[in-house]
Length: 157
Picture (cartoon, rainbow, N blue to C red):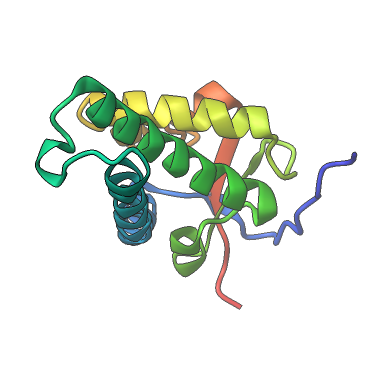
């Protein structure tokens, strides 16, 4: 299947740190809602399907690690879905940002996974992977470099 080719306005430029952080904040609010829903479903599963006592939920390694795994999984699926669908999450739309290949096409699922994995590592390194945008001549973050993609700022129409 051919990758979706995006329309490239003449004045499209690499996104700076400010708009990226703004989009992250917006997407963080959406993810908080998703995390709440996942946590409620997880708790309901342990309480009503596995018939675990309410006071005991969250006290075992299985309870804790299964929830952590679900949160990472749903976060990854959130980004992969939106990045492949149109190159933008809802936060990125608000800030007029788009992720794309260096050739201006939609990114693959594999590139989405690489971006997510590198994003987790960038955040674990106190955000250094995103601060990298300030020092890279092409304004690339670690996820951009690792996945061979770029985030561009779209002009106002």
